[in-house]
Image (cartoon, rainbow, N blue to C red):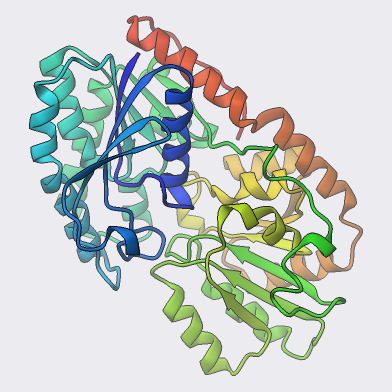
Length: 420
């Protein structure tokens, strides 16, 4: 197949949507498909154009047999709702000349649009209509719902327009995929037929990310005491997770010299977290930069317990991508999730971690106390087993390939890839 992918994030970004889209494109190309990607200059999660791409405009490069066509965009140093809107529209403006060039190439069989940004689908849809390609929308985050429920956009008129545009793009898609059963239900509740929706979950390469001993971890590199009990949060330091709660809980452990909170990553909320730690005079919260992918297993082995945090208002609007790696590394997670959400259900059904109420410092503190005072071996074994059974990169991408083959041939019917 000739496959065209539109997405604002792509490799070499190490975390978030760009990581998964990059691995998807590379896998499809490795397996004999002709893949082109329209994307931005890489900037995530630092919210700064990566050094090797600074000063560049429109350019084409080849990564793992994938043609990657990049457009410049505005990247705000401090992310606000308004600046993020400008950021996303600047990308849409930047890809217009690329869109015209692609229009006169040999036709692609399938066009995949990765959302967010949700409105990115306008140009790929228009291409598919003109050239007769099959248009697929893949939802990593339900961006409009999140903007409403997190209070990022409060103007009802603007929200109504956004929801109508989102519904139009879903209606015009040959198929809509998403990463969890809960998000699948929310899309169906928007009036999209179940036959058009299929699960395409995030995955993990369980051969690369695997359990390691503490001796193989980054404890020595991070100058941690051998007997330190480490509570780790690693990933995007953004708004959806409610990470201020880590600082609140750390205050209650400030007299416990054996417990250290490690925060690893980048994002729009990092400076605020550092300020909160400094204002509270805490010495038990340590920050480290995002680690390279080859160190991920060692990083995850550093923790006694992992934090997987979400706000109540973000339930089933996003799915924490960090969880797949934690499970593959055999980690025990403390997960903030509401009953009835996909995240809660999978953790509970498979005993993969400790569930606590979202946005409750006391509940999170109790969860940490319980975890650090328990034998976590069963959680660790369950986590690794689950990743091998349900999160295998090869299995999930083979299923995607089969689904895309059906879509390109015009076949319909709900698909049932099983995982979180």
